[in-house]
View 1 (tube, protein in one colour):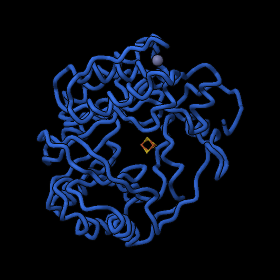
View 2 (cartoon, helix red, strand yellow):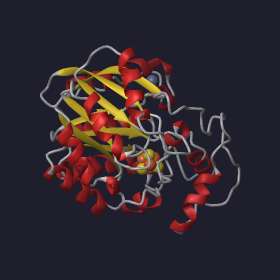
View 3 (cartoon, helix red, strand yellow):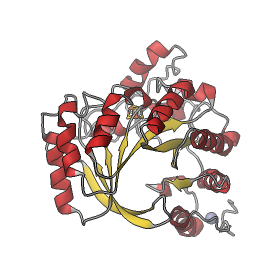
Length: 330
Ligand code: SF4
Ligand SMILES: [Zn+2]
């Protein structure tokens, strides 16, 4: 469901894009609208397995922190749906972490994903960082997410306050020049590379999010661009590439889809991107399997294909493609 059926084309002028994207949002509670979330509570918390850098599969806790919306307006972003309009009160983030951890089993690794940038001072109050770090001393690795623009001095201070290793996840998205610019991320390959250099100087790990089939690049080249983007991320020191198939559900991408400017990837495109990125043999590559079914058109082979991706995530070994006598989609 789109929030707006306005047929105005996506602006070519960067200054007009925020308004176009914002106007496609749905009303609160609708499928493309903001949800009711609270500064008192993380909006999600779960534990899953992930292959760690030393080849051991470990349990990883992910806490989806509730905080103020990211200041950027990326075309593909739906993370704002679980955010607040205002900065959270002092102590709220630490309290969210305490409450979430109390309900999860004990694990070694934690991801704190905040629908924006962990080092954005209006999202996570900087004065709270020592208190947050104190909660995290029992973890061997702490992973947070951040736009390159917010990779600054707080990263080193937070790293120093932890006992375990800090890793920062950044959205590289794509190295396709036109697509990256039109995604409205306000980031260039140079600014990504500068932030990655800074993280490496600080001995902070890097994880890169790469989009599979964003708008504004040829669909037939979608897997190629994902692989090339993964290579760029590896060249700039990332230890993990996470491949994210682009989903429409934020209003803006749904509107672009209606205009014929966006097509969600096929499952086979994600598989191609994953197989080929893994075959580079550079470092870990994960395929994001959340809500994977929406990219499948064939119930006959979906389960086997999903299982293959999950197994490859945990082993980092290429497996033969399943093939399907029903859809012939390989
Ligand atoms: S920087 Fe990340 S959280 Fe912020 S709008 Fe872009 S994709 Fe969304
Ligand atoms: Zn099939």
